[in-house]
Length: 133
Image 1: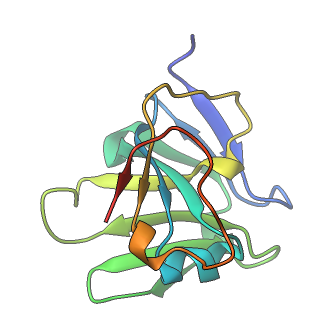
Image 2 (image 1 turned 60 degrees about the vertical axis):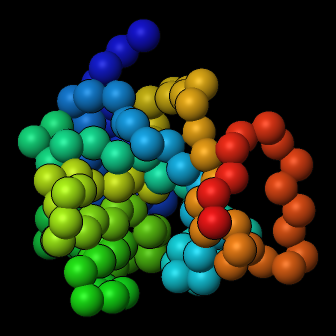
């Protein structure tokens, strides 16, 4: 299995590379992730910032501060939700990648659902992954 992953937005204006396998794979059901993705949940994997390389499209990315310490980033052309990061705390050295934007095949045996108390009332979780909150 490769430890280098390529990704891009829907229109291809933004391209990135991950130089390690995404970790902490989670499916977040909080209202901010649902609204940001327009779906029942958002699936993310995280890498150390040093393992993230923006290949193309830095000027095509806009940021939205969704809370005091969390910044979400998206493509200005196609609107693809791409990344989020926390500027404070123990995970400030990490960036979370919207897994749907990966172009390189990726699988993970360890996943979890988070913020399930905020899940959309019309969505039932039907898989075997652990759930928290």
